Length: 139
Image 1 (spheres, rainbow, N blue to C red):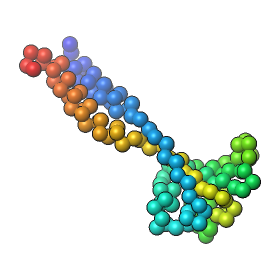
Image 2: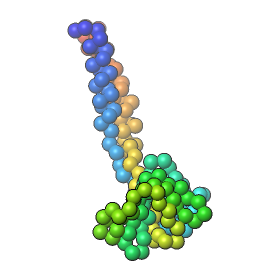
Image 3: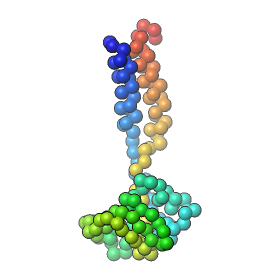
Image 4: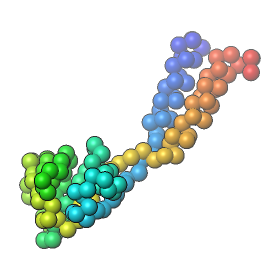
């Protein structure tokens, strides 16, 4: 077996195993008054990049912000507006006063913590397997 195959194959296998990580959806709700507070830990996670912000209104509509900022009691950014039946009715730059919303919700996809724990043993196992494949009589 050529040396490059013995080196590249285990490295490729390790990368594929790392790519098979699990993800979890972290969903959090917060009242509009709590969203204004930067010190509030629930509100702080809403400010993480990549977090979607959904604002639910009394009439059933929902604003879904992809990118957003909070200033002067108004949430503004880009996203879409859904009616009570969740049909898209608007898209683009949006602004919503905090007192118009009943509830704010965040949806953030994150890698599950168990993946980090499994990464180290996986790398060690692949490394040992690569050494055995490179020189089977030595081990």
